[in-house]
Length: 249
Image (cartoon, rainbow, N blue to C red; front, side, top):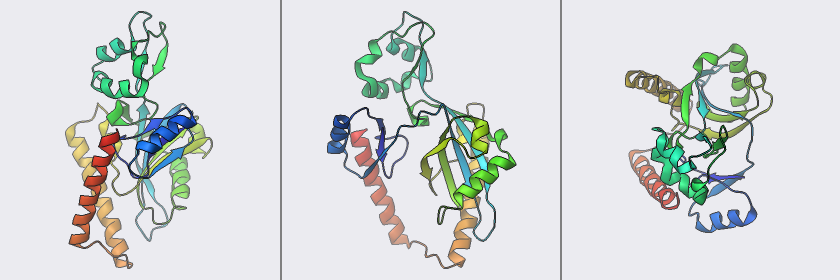
């Protein structure tokens, strides 16, 4: 099973648990509401960013990020720890990985063995993000649009999805939404190593413009915006929430 904060960010306090006792231990130390999810073993994971302007009939996919989970390949003689340290992308994650797998970092994978170290696709936990927006098709767009329109009030955000095969995802088959991120979502395809900071700023600006359009339409239709005081209080509450998550991550 996967356990994670109901309101979380950047992979904090997410764990894969194997038994009921581990769940009890997690619950006893978790200071915020959390949820328990079935561990989905589909081989592919991606994030699909979706936008729909209120009052329009159809939304669109604005970006897709595919994720390569943090894993090492054994050479038959190096420990997992040594393989992590030797990788310029992974060695920053050593402390976090040791919290996940403990003494297993001293084990030696067989030559050619792929050892998955972090079972979820989070950039802050070492996953490599690849811009796969070229895979957007009309069929996939229609599938995601039909799905998102079933979620009341959802006009902007990213769905993190695990799936069996790209062709089946386009058809709406054999996939599972493992996370839904709303207005605070990032267009995470910007984190592809091939992209420049200029591309990232351009994409962030594009998505903030979508968010502004959606907010403006919703306010015109009667949605109430936060007051300044309410906004400040929300930011303060979020800061306290993040500190709680850091204390158990």
